[in-house]
Length: 179
Image (cartoon, rainbow, N blue to C red; front, side, top):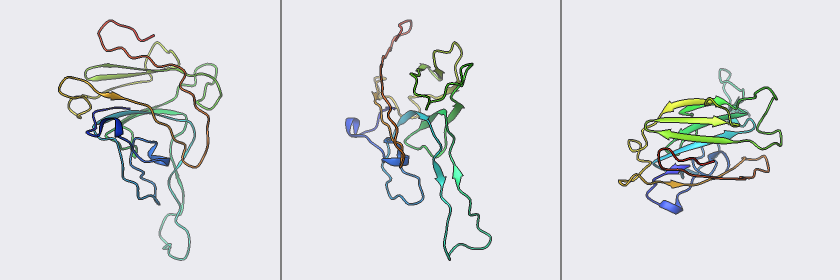
């Protein structure tokens, strides 16, 4: 998460489907905390219920009673503490070896920003998984000096998963590398 939330280091979102940066938009939640003025990269390893089925005697005969599922094995960008709908997204590239986020192997993600373009690369690919336009100053994600907070968060909702951040590098000048 890259942000310029007024609460600085104290910025945070909801647990569970809020994934630590967003409001919890699930049917039964009352948590509305989110990281404002932000751009978040989200990796989704498995499907989550994004709209639960209504059950019981109060369900009308014309109401849908199906469950809506979120995407799985995907990478996406989200703005201003909302993960209800991705700003930009792609399936996590399987490649020739059938890589999935849940396969137990090490995966790599690189984000490159050259105003206003955001490039998201996965598994050291030469071409980005997707490219989109985001003007960080326009969404308030940087302060007047062009600075932001950068942080990490994780959540699985009701499931469990062991995820390790093995390396992190940051490069802020044209021509430098973060390898």
